[in-house]
Amino acid sequence: MTDDASPELRASDADRERVAEVLRDAVAEGRLDMEEFEERLEAAYSARTYGELAPLTRDLPAAGAATPPPPVSFTKEPARSGSWAGRIVGGEGSSSGAVAIMSGFQRKGRWTVPKRFNCFAFWGGGEIDLREADFADREVEINCVAVMGGVQVVVPPGVEVVVRGIGIMGGFDHPRDDGPSEPGAPRVIIGGLAFWGGVGVERKVTRAEQKRLKEQRRQERLERRESRHELLRERREQRERRRGY
Image (tube, rainbow, N blue to C red; front, side, top):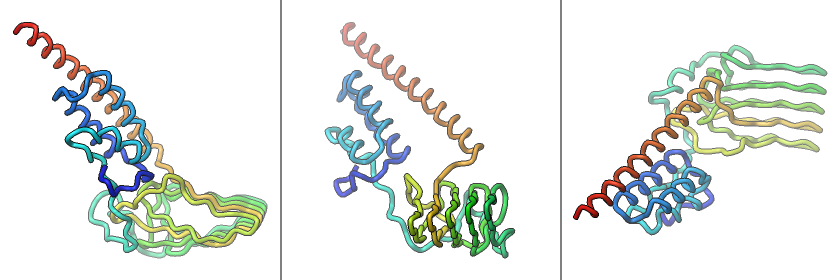
């Protein structure tokens, strides 16, 4: 972590892995004993912020492994490649609005979000799920009016979210664990009015992505376990060679 990185910034999986790599090099070079290495490695993988990662490599030659993410740009970049390249489809959108009066509505699955989507909930509720949606433009606006009702907006990771709604005896929630947007991802502006009601915004991955991430974490645990075993073998071999001398 660099000295000018804000300690309260959230650390990513890549940041934690870079710190872990520095620790593995340090134990292989004899700078850390096995007990200290395991303590620091466990702390690295459980760290949430740069402030928690920084002390783990501060006294090692390669300290600074955790670097802050690039600043968020307010100018949307065109999609180059990847998952967002085919999801900005243009057109008018497959649904322009929704109404729930003492009832409910849902917009989820594969649908196209228009440039402006208007919804109204009175004594009712609605769900707007953007995880599998396409987008008519790189910037879309969702206008929510909730009167003694509620609307829940679900966005996938990587999408930039701007919340501009007004709450009167109600409120607009911002997504938790918000991070920088991905290149080419759309910007979603959520505005409107909540009167004795609420509009919530949360980030979730799809079930398929959850399954993929679970399998990825399992593989990473196996690799870390194998790496620890390999380090232990190397240390034993080093001790045996010293005894032989």
